[in-house]
Image (cartoon, rainbow, N blue to C red; front, top):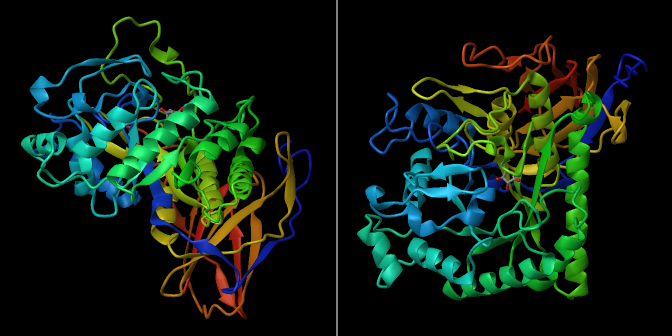
Length: 513
Ligand code: AHR
């Protein structure tokens, strides 16, 4: 049922109260992470295209670099994804002319290894100090020994075979990779080297223990479930954590959303699902912790999330081709205003759980299910989903305030009765507050009243909205700027109350000082 059509939408305002005494927790900057996988054109002709007119001396597209900086991504997960389960790190280092071409089983492509580990670290440095590495290791076709070799090559200063090899390859300084993912989606039947929870728990524990022997201070992410719809969801986490609880810091979550059977109303409520997955995984972690009588808390790394159309995990997109193409066009989703509103709502969901979700990665960064698109030899541009991410990363740093909304609701097939308003608020160090809000109604504007207690806020700095008369509007190769956020007038702050009107189907950022 569509709000405002079959069932009239109530016009009463949505409300909530903000009070500095009621907080959720501080935002880890890594909540605004992203993901670069050797998938399609994410790397090749995405971030790396030596022949492009905007490429620097290392082949990195500087036009894309500028957009990445503007997007405000922090940690960047690499090199996969499904790709990592066949990854041989040693193929991706050393003289480029010596690097082998390999079959990539995950995406049925040919990997040239022209861009590898050293290039990834150099790329992060070019983005700036906010961009930190998050390296996944292959626990699909490989194991403890190769993980240790990679760690030694990457992080040991010098004086051993592999650290000296790195130096001989031209990287004198260690890469300093602190955050490591112990494999990827090992519960998925599509994963090369897919394992049962007991098998994976065992290899994850062995790998974690050995990696900590090299460096006890590394941060480690164990693989959680790939999706909530898998029959092993939650049981997988419990079994894996039983083996790894004292050895890892995070458990991973992945979620991709798209409308099913044209059910836009349920799609708009995707964050209801995301919040419930987070709550379930937190409960599972704490249950295992209680069982083990541990005081330690395992936090969450939501290291793949996005709106995504047509994700075929069998690599079938290319499966009738026997030619194993290099960097084919795969998963090049074009995002609408509707998609951007859902992405905004997913960002709100992550922020609302910032106390336990410490790391999150928008999957992915360029071309493949990405906020940034490029054309080989041509321009780079921002998709609609670029804007909510960039604004959340810019203004969503600080203490998350507890937001309990009183909102009109609508009915959804998948999630039952859902609030039309989805919101969170973050208080920055300087005392300013940003409210992030989504109006899920496709038909009606939603008046919003926020009571501000003890925050010392006196003015509205700005109210930006992403909305459009055409929810299917998008930015394209020929029209890069069809959709951009714009300033909304009429938002006021008086007598301790913020009053605003949220347009139908809109993402809103209201800044208060
Ligand atoms: O992001 C695309 C793919 O989705 C990743 O490779 C995999 O981990 C997930 O299933």
